[in-house]
Length: 310
Image (cartoon, rainbow, N blue to C red; front, side):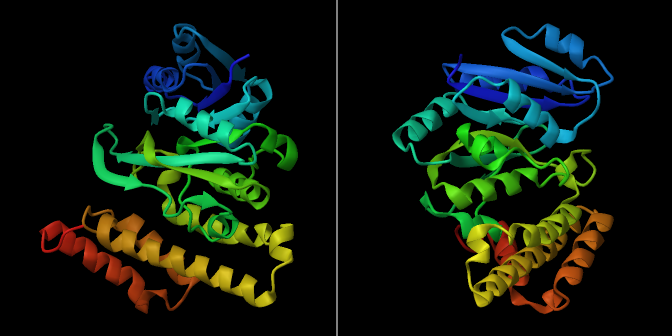
């Protein structure tokens, strides 16, 4: 029985697996690595047979990432659980450092660290994603999509799943946000400032599920209404619920418009840019004239030209 179980769901990407597995192995001293093959139809099974020291689970019907993660949870033996996508990488020793923090904070549901952003070739882009606060009660921030956390950067206490349930496989690509929000409703969160993983960023044509950012954020906005049924939200006032909803919608709309203007259009990804703007207008018809996205865009352009320091 290992202290930490690392669950790696995979589907038809065997060329990426060895690197992900080795990064998980180097990230902790007492790690169980579980590769869940989500009904691949290529040589994934053969590649996995050549990877020493892993627990290989084969699914005969495709369950999606959330379903594969749930199967991994069922067969895991560790006290703590980490999710690692097959195209991301854990940094050496990162799991041991996070496990030590959970050991020291027995009431915490999970610990999260920073992530180094990388391109499709695993080259860092000089962007670091990390929570802006020290942790503790982050439920409302997560509910409003104001607390950046992803599976790559977290280590979760397994007992959380016994208390709140497993991941929802019916909400494609946002199951991780949903589970972290539900955990944070009942548990405090620990934040560590240093990076724990390398995140391979999707592009509109990369084939990664999270590359369809506009559709993903539209699902987030819709699913937030379901999360409003959680006891802590129900107990809040109507004014507080409306404010939380407005902050999230504004944040999503501004992010979509900024991404369209600052990233998609300069790269001639016109279709992705249009999709972003249409979803932003659908969520908030006056978002196109809000200053937030344009202020962020202006600052980004100034930084690129070197006129001001970061």
